[in-house]
Length: 317
Image (cartoon, rainbow, N blue to C red; front, side, top):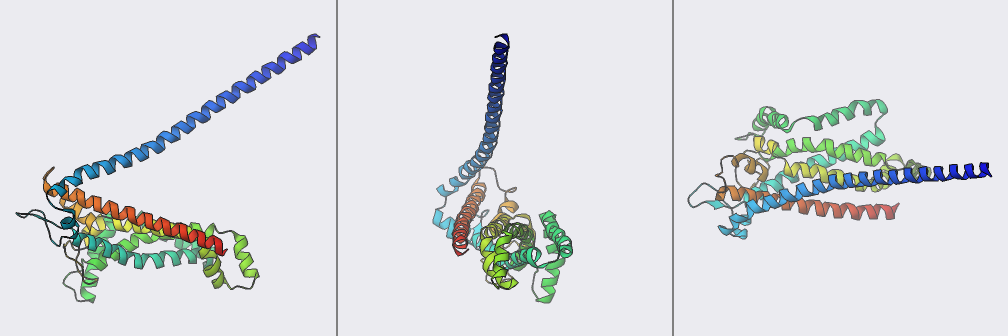
């Protein structure tokens, strides 16, 4: 009887110990969930406060100028009497620079990723990939300085231009900055395609090129689209490069070699000189609102396209 009682007490103690450990584990897991929730909430709160501050400082300008005149106004002379607060030239400059940079960077970035992931040997991949990623480590001011000192004189001499600081120079430098992002993320997406899909395509008689075009690219199109989104987002929001090499002229571009001033460059160049809480100050923050809306719309559209092509790719496979 004593042995049975002792065994029962030991089992009860073991059960209590197990229950106590379980409760401790649940408390730790709950604390970890709360910690990560607070981290995520802090990020969202910070972003929300930035947006609120941006709109609080930008909206007062519309008491002096209408939204239509601000968006579609052709002249930006914020220090004149009376001042002109039209940012249409700045908007067109931002769109033109981003478009030309995307035309250059997207094919180069995606094709480089396909080459490194599917064509290049291991030795070439180990040599080329660090070089591509090294471009991402270059500070934007260094790329801008390179555009001013090397690219601008070259363009000016070769194309007989009055200045080498223009839309094409800025787009070229932004493309250099976007290629590493597009290439790295696209390569990761291509590597994530299951090997079975490639082997099945080759077993059915498809060539390597047909496998890349009809299997690998559709299967990784979502990741490639994400890479393009991130690359173009960096291009449209970049400040230092366009400030240094775009030319700084508030003109609507009519050719690739016109000097321009995109919205980020205008904000960076003039914010230090704008009187605090003056009309010029509010107009620059309103320009930031427009840039924020453009970036938001671009990301929403790009995310929709990525989701659509992910569904198409899954249906095709």
